Length: 110
Image (cartoon, rainbow, N blue to C red; front, side):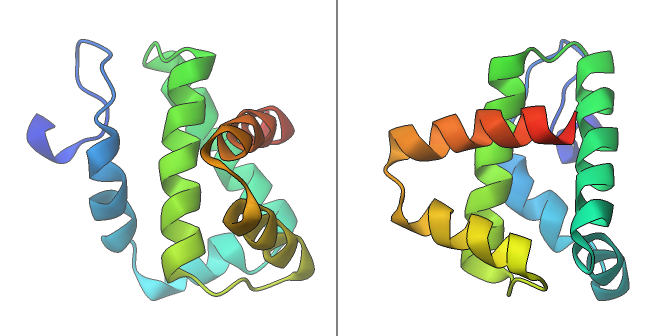
């Protein structure tokens, strides 16, 4: 059902669904994605392509990346040095800096 998805048919993004979507991910899948930084980038790249196919622009992608980063910073223990660095940068950054970092993460994953 569309109500369970972050991206609606009209292209609108419901970033309030990010936490729900991430919580539905099972532990094994999360370990596969987060266990290796290159695997994490590959996963993000696929999701960015999916978002672009759905009509999301860079700002919408960055706002979604912000919500994902917020969730990861609060709920997930980093599994490698790169993720540890990203989490530390996220936690010390202002909202403006986090938004800029989200844009950079989208570019990095593309």
